[in-house]
Image (cartoon, rainbow, N blue to C red; front, side):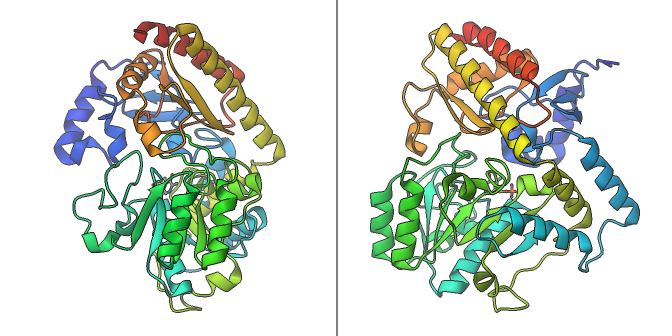
Length: 429
Ligand SMILES: *Cc1c(COP(=O)(O)O)cnc(C)c1O
């Protein structure tokens, strides 16, 4: 069954590089942070993917989060197939989007209404527009190392993919577009308090569990402090739960921490592997959105039926037992990686929230972007290559989380741990 086509990945990369910048549709996929060239993936089944050379890998990328049910889950495939036969897009309201919206409203604390979009980027840029519309203020605050998609005002200190000074992180972003974006260090309440006092903010935007500088949980009291500052200053608290929504708990970080946000951004899991995002809040806040209110936002493929079907089928799988399972898988991998790193005598630290995890090559806790960037990224690059050679596909950057799914087994986790033991021994010193 393993049709080996040697050199197929390299040939595809050469072709891809001729017609797409870096040969990819999203920069991190090009493996620039770890070196080497990426496998071209032709299929996925449960916890595994297969590349163009017929090699099989245990996949710990899981499409960067959406695939909480694993690859090609039969229920998700069946839902997409059934809908495809009925039509793929109508540009009109459909029953499926009502059902998915009701499912999200039921699951996420404080959310009464939402608007579907097609990506996390759209969800976040629309949430910022909504906060500005609702408050009549322009300035927003974000945290260094948090990524909220690639919209101009949010491309300042935006984490893994990009990096620099309250200035735009990307060429082509006008200074004016980020002038109203204040950036402070994650987990720094004093700096947040000072910034929110200096200027009336429309929004404090945060990844409640940061996932785009590796896995960085909030310090005890940090999110509660943001809630307090928002209440005192009239800024809306925006939780970007594009990763954490329906992943760290059904109700996301709000359910896990008990801290309420005013606006929630969703994506990834709610689309079950198809392109979906959403921004959500109370009815009072969402009433600012057109056609009910004056804030314009629209999308030809928003609420796309195939995507709604995939999202619904995925969310149906996420009961209490599913979250217990994801937690136990995560704990098993955390314990395993922690043990093999200690055995190898390598300064390393596993940080985890539920089924999100990063093995940082650093001696101490990682609380913010500066800490994360001080981790040994060249050691991570060697580790990544050694794991790839052993059939484990890790996210190709130290500053990312790996993702577990319901399709991963205890045996998968133990295979990953054994591979890590050998890989760490190989790269030690
Ligand atoms: C992935 C991500 C986004 C952007 O979502 P896209 O679908 O890639 O546009 C926004 N915020 C967070 C926290 C993310 O992890």
